[in-house]
Amino acid sequence: MVIGTSGASAADTVPLAVTSLLQRLPKAHVRLVESTMNLLMSQLARGEVDIVVGRSAPELQDGQMRAEALYMEPIHFVARPRHPLFELAEPGWSDLQAYRWIVWPRGTPIRNTMESALNAAGQGMPADCVESNSVILNLTLLNHSNMIGVASHRTARRLEHLGALRILALRLAGFGSVSMYWRDDGFGRIAVSAALDALRRAAVRSVDEIPGDTDG
Image (cartoon, rainbow, N blue to C red; front, side, top):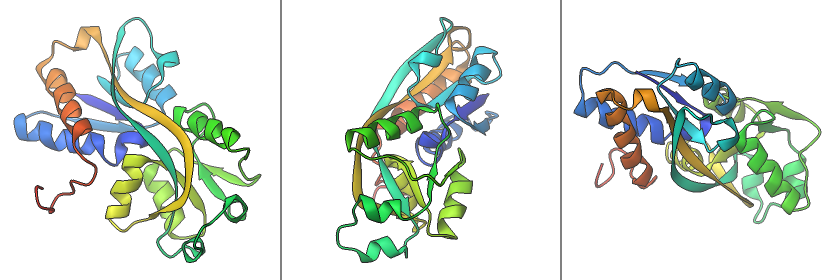
């Protein structure tokens, strides 16, 4: 079984669901693919992946797909833990604009949400930005520079718990939903059905429930 995930769910929901799935079906073979929603939805349409999880993208859905919203969440600005911005009591837009940003590629749902939130705040992106759709690449760039990143809430909170980055106090107003997509002709498979159930359970689990905490 192949599960495709965008950056919105790659750091939290999908790995939690896969861990739960393998406990239930220890012999299940799972392959994970991380990419942007437009590419993943094309792969789903061609039958190359079984499930796609990421920012809701109804405009990319065809008649053979089923969809289910998992949760709503905001997006945050993030930076390395020792970034100079954390020395400011209340960083403002001009403070953030002084640094290069890492943003998701044009046309991706999280990029669209970010641009709408910036427009609502009367702001725009800096002229100098790096486009990347990889959580790992973004994390490495952020930790080795003073760049500013944008991350969905669960991803940001998960990485903050790990000490990899911190959420900046200046919040974006934009919210977006995360959904899972699958094909009608694939739902009957035991592993796919079990994976969908595992994703539902992971979606309602608090982002603060980190392994090793009180309830593990």
